[in-house]
Image (cartoon, rainbow, N blue to C red):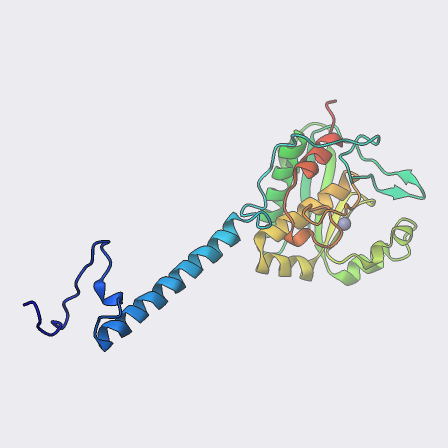
Length: 253
Ligand SMILES: [Zn+2]
């Protein structure tokens, strides 16, 4: 059939294995089909490229709760990694170097998912510090007691406003919770914690870790990737320096 018209539905294949219809010599239908195939290929390639950028890029941490090895972290004179400091009150460090075990419990009600987020947070703290951190009912020896409470912002305000420690630290403005300076008692502002839980479970666990950092005496850092940043920690992750800082406040003892 050397000079006959193109046979409908029959697509010739050239030497590279691609349909010959993509060439200019195809019929109008063939060209439309080729254009459609091209568009589909472009869409698929674009989607693939975008997913590579999202999952393969430096800025996106696929597992924000992974605990990296604290290799290569530089330490300062205060014994903490570069950029980290202890909470201070009137110039004095409020270091809470801890020797395990730590016994934790939730005081009062926890919102749905709240207990799991606290459990995951303290498990990560145990991993980073090497301390035995256990639910209070599982510890029958003297231990550092650590309590978590989920309360309304009004309760927190009435409890801490004007406190001799809160004012100099500007803690009255803190949004999600309090930890550290008040002792080993962490209070979360219930509606904000619930919002974090609803939108992003990892963020809620990072919120627990952030307050635990304060509970062991760590102040905020300027690195926005660290969960010890003052405001970006809900989008942060666990950095090698965070791990080193937690380990430093729980030295072998
Ligand atoms: Zn904080």
